[in-house]
Image (tube, helix red, strand yellow):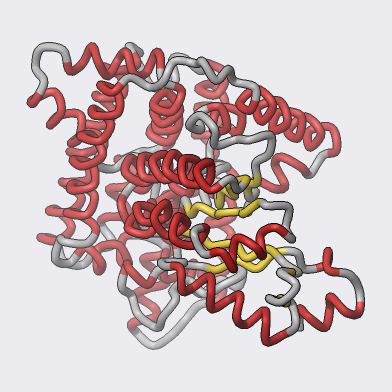
Length: 442
């Protein structure tokens, strides 16, 4: 089909072929072979009519991205094909699935390290790298202020160009109005220029920062995986305490909620995963694990641990952006409201165990963010956003309470063998209202 469209119209109509869940060189070479069979690649001439773009999504794939691209670029035949594409190769990085796989902190750190490795590999092979950031609207899917996110990229990752996705409600919020859209595009251009023109002599990130970040990531990863993937009954807790079942029935997404017909967290797509936690005001994908990580780090470094983390926040844009986004997400959480959703879980012991862990981790995370940033309250450093969020709560909180009651009635009716369409409509309306009030929630 792509080859036919190239013939009928122009190669520019389909310039890119994305490979989801790319985990090896063979995925890219198999795509090149398919392109050859379709007439989109001519090896004798060294011509390739579309960009082949691998997407590294899971934590394991991000860790392997550099070695995979190193082996690929070392192949003379493939390097020759890139010559017909301007000696440039695009690589896409997945924020959503890496977060679901390893949690907020580890996802951000592994993305950062993957970029550093890719910059080194491409420089060695003399191929221009263009990074494509698959960011979503929510912080749990790579969202947050675009300007700060671009400036937080490692040195050499923005080489005069950057590609990123804008998804969901973010599109309407950023580009629904021409003036606002122009302003947001100006912000992207300004950040790209500033990052690209950063002096080569700029001070490298201190090794102590890198070591501390690795220690934090290891501890956060263990805490996140321990809850989500290693706690018996967590899957049941998630499906009963959130609106995931009702979201899965909504015809609003481009893809099904799960990749397979199962309730396993591994098979669930990242968008409904994050969206469900947002609706019940837990926002778990945007912060869970950080409190445990900081606690472990300070225990291991009692003398200068806190001072080092505070320095990292002051001097390292990457760490500063992580904390800023976490600060915003935590300000939108409400565990009092979340406890009402937890009451939907039928197994009282399971409910108390898992929600107790979530509450304890939330308290530890809020405390860690405040100690490192020096704030007395969340978002003290951003009073405009703090006021905006607080002004929305009086309208938002009642919707959550209505939603909980509607979910209870809907599920009781379903168990009795009947569905009230008015209740189902009410749930859908509450989902839309809460998403609008939280804004970057999906």
